[in-house]
Image (cartoon, rainbow, N blue to C red):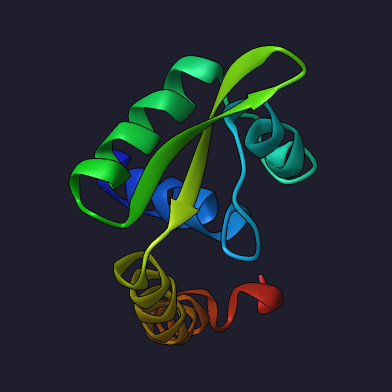
Length: 105
């Protein structure tokens, strides 16, 4: 898969993982695991990129005596998810065009 396309898909996946509630690294990985394997190093690179792009914010909170970083999606991040959904409609249409007739082979 094209690296830029995959990068964009992973960004949207991470945003979706925190869309309904703030979350932290380990939980994001756990929530995504049924759909995609993601290493901690890859996740934290994505989270930093999304923070710089102002698609999420970061805050810390104490949990069981430890400081935990939580990630919160911003309006910009929510907008990116919606843009992806619109883009995907076009991608799906292109995929159908590319694969039409394949079932005949």
